Image 1: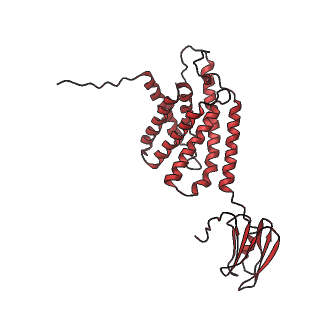
Image 2: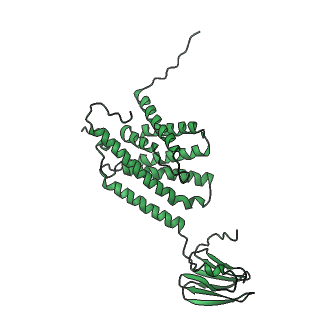
Image 3: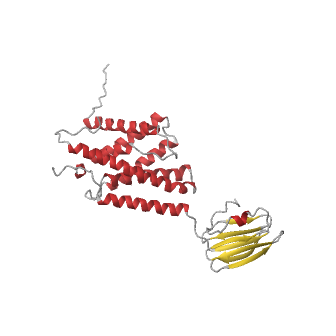
Length: 132
Length: 183
């Protein structure tokens, strides 16, 4: 084969080692993009409101329980390392209890009848789509 | 009164570029007929032609074929200078720029599949950059990034393997003249 001929013209029926590298790098790139764009940031603070006023702000480090008074009765908020939930609420439909554990920054559980809300915050405040 | 004649000499190179561009345009039209689950996710079959042209006739020829494809595709779809046309142009330009760099990779290690995957990522990157900057500013596109990137990886790899096969087929027969890749 003459030297001037591009070597890519040689039979290219097999993968070359760099091809596999490019494919792996592409897969890693997709994984990184997925985590970056779809995964929320882990929350580290829980903010509890009653009737619109912040009554408790606590870090998600140690397990504890708060009892918040509202018009209907007592809402129990349970904090565990890295997550928080509304454990019990007197509201009839129990939406905020059924939401379960909240972990990501920006997640919120609203117990509207009892006017209590639980919000998770992270380092960077996520957009509040409920408020906007 | 003298008759003036404007002569536009046509070289063999011009004819070849025109033929290859026609093939790329045909593939673009054909794949527009394919249903796609997500708008914008397409196999990019014309990139097979662009890559073959790059490997066999150099980057300049590939750029010509790509530009003609985008222009003629815009004319045929009736979307000339519409947003879709500019998205197409941005993708083609970005993938050509990526190829301009990637073709200098050592050929012993990086074959057509590498070039095709890199070009596909460049294509989607150029399109999304223009779309994000011009058409859809904001965070909405970011959520779609993984979808488009996955499509780029899969279709890029498949197109690259097709290029590999075509190259192998064209070099395995021992004809004296250049093999006709595109009957």
